Image 1 (cartoon, rainbow, N blue to C red):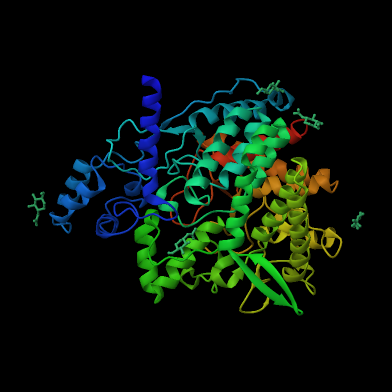
Image 2 (image 1 turned 90 degrees about the vertical axis):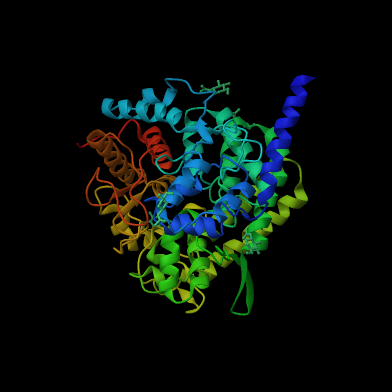
Length: 541
Ligand SMILES: *[C@@H]1O[C@H](CO)[C@@H](O)[C@H](O)[C@H]1NC(C)=O
Ligand SMILES: *[C@@H]1O[C@H](CO)[C@@H](O)[C@H](O)[C@H]1NC(C)=O
Ligand SMILES: *[C@@H]1O[C@H](CO)[C@@H](O)[C@H](O)[C@H]1NC(C)=O
Ligand SMILES: *[C@@H]1O[C@H](CO)[C@@H](O)[C@H](O)[C@H]1NC(C)=O
Ligand SMILES: CC(=O)N[C@H]1CO[C@H](CO)[C@@H](O)[C@@H]1O
């Protein structure tokens, strides 16, 4: 009985804390208002994210009341105020446990090269360091923290990223399944479901200040991967309505109708409206927004680019060299629509499996329409390639090469011509660089441009090459990326979020913060590639 009351108490407490921020963040400590503005514009912390990750020691009301009585222009005073009223950054997130971690999963013994087997063993044990959970113990009953109060442990990228991220988790899950950690994966998916139920959608990361923007919608593909691994149809039955919900959210909030040759096509766009800076990058946004001459437009575009996962890239800029010309609102991204196509196919398959033929047929029809739309809107006939669609130019953007241009291929779209011809145009990106595949062929100082090599695309490209019987090309790509991550680890003892295309082992640069180590999806992708190519892959440093 006492136990039940205790559980009930925890539930009510968690719920009442969470309820404050449905849909978008209303917190005047973490998301908007004078306090946030004063702290962030005082440049008190090198990284703007530090402050928004500091749980309060008192209620929001008490904190705001005390803040109104100090001279916030006095930096020393402001610092004292923060020390008195806040816990250290990140203190409501503590180490978690991996319930189904075993020291030597089978795939390790299939890696022939001993250096790489040693490296894989290290990466596998690294999951335990990157496992975190939410901890309410330091919080008083009215205290506030920006972290989502999720019930199960989760895996974070590492470095400044102390919470889990939406799309990053896709590559983490793929890799956990290779190590047969399906209970952990199930727990992570349940966290996503909770958040989806609380907010109606999945935010960029598990913090209230990420509300109002999502990230590439890969939940459906994560659940599919888990299901393929476990055949857990009970789980599927109990969660399929949430997958429908996630799909509907994107169709309701982030779709756009395009008319081409008298035919209407319904497509998706990343889209966020905002009239204020991102709380975790406040000073950076505030300064740029005011220099841009149109702050509201700038804030919305910057948040939207954060939703795309490509924050930031010349892909979204009118002038590739100037972030202040960001105009993602004019772009329909080819990768997002390819992801949605795959989601529709998966939903059709899963509903059919559960005996719901009617819903299955609807999704099947939607996927066929999307297939047609992708080959119509994102296909450039003359250049024989896919690319993002620019609404203003009413044409495909082909000024530069982005790896995402190829996403229809790996999400299963049949291109209008033999894919060898499409791939030829991208030979330089795919095969010319020692460290793997750079995000683009243009050097801009943004982190999602040349020379930065990011892990996730190595999985998708390799999968496409393997399903089209191009084993040696797939191995070639896997080899270069695994080698660079290995060399970086050997030399610097760390795994990074991005690498330099031309110098194996050297980490990438650019963007808003210093390069982070850890690193969730890089570890996941390297394990994925070593599992696939364990017999052939080598190191060169
Ligand atoms: C700023 O605050 C500190 C600490 O409260 C105080 O000692 C100092 O006199 C203040 N400075 C000014 C210029 O008011
Ligand atoms: C994977 O884990 C499940 C239980 O979660 C177990 O039944 C199964 O034998 C494991 N498979 C391997 C290959 O270890
Ligand atoms: C899942 O079910 C399919 C079809 O019934 C079967 O082929 C497969 O081996 C099963 N996989 C697991 C992990 O039980
Ligand atoms: C595409 O072209 C390649 C090389 O020219 C050929 O080997 C392959 O069979 C073609 N694929 C299809 C689907 O026609
Ligand atoms: C997910 C999302 O975009 N939610 C909301 C963001 O904020 C605007 C208003 O500022 C709402 O209209 C959106 O629904």
